[in-house]
Image 1: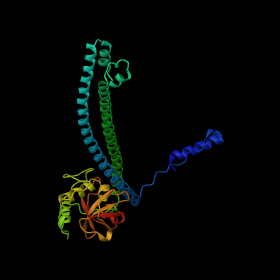
Image 2: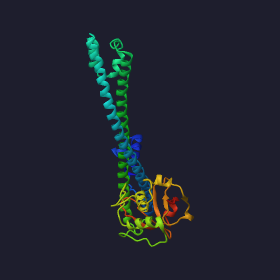
Image 3: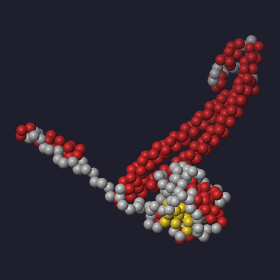
Image 4: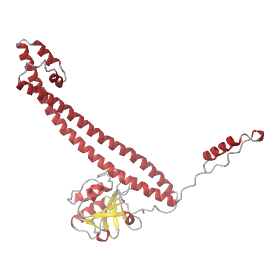
Length: 332
């Protein structure tokens, strides 16, 4: 029971009974400190945060892709807007010529109307003032109005799409900072205990050589991945300075001439699914229920992967932890 809870309880008792003889009230009682977490509890929390961080980085990667798509869409819309702008000005000149013709026909009020109205749609509402226009001229004026509306609609669409994508990316960056801070705190606590984290330390020495049995494209992918051992895990990283998990698998298989999508979610949707007992070196393994992490099977019960923030690319044994988190694999 914490000090505040004990104090509130004591206060309630005193309020119900009144002040005791001599003006003395019941004491608040001793304060109890929160118990220190055990190593098992810290390791469990690290597992939870690691999984959460893995999911966030994939969501962030997807948000980056969505933003890039929105920016491309924005560029395309700006080109369309430019085309509409030219069309808009061309039609404005035609409308001005109508006004000039009306002036020459001694209808100056029509001229004033056409040239003074900023919103083209307002012209059509003033049917009495544009009654001098022919049917063809009215059609062109309607086209002028439609062009203006299309221009505004395209601008709004581009801005909304881009704003939403940027907002989503920024939200995920904030969440990432919170999770990484919590993870660093738990790692610091774990460092105070003897032994290693439950995930194992793995081999993270600088650069490594693959010596397994893989051949062809799988061999090329593993050669590349092993050469990255020791490089830092970088949130959203696609190399060459560092990688996140799906960035590493994408780059490794890319070096073998195989194009993979960016996120673990999209990579998991590839065909050629394989089960645990069908694994071959080079297969991409996926972990956690939400497919938040992946790595490349190296054979002999090992995997090369980019683990999580604050760590480096490493070769690890699958037994004892990762085999319990495995959800599936694909063969590119």
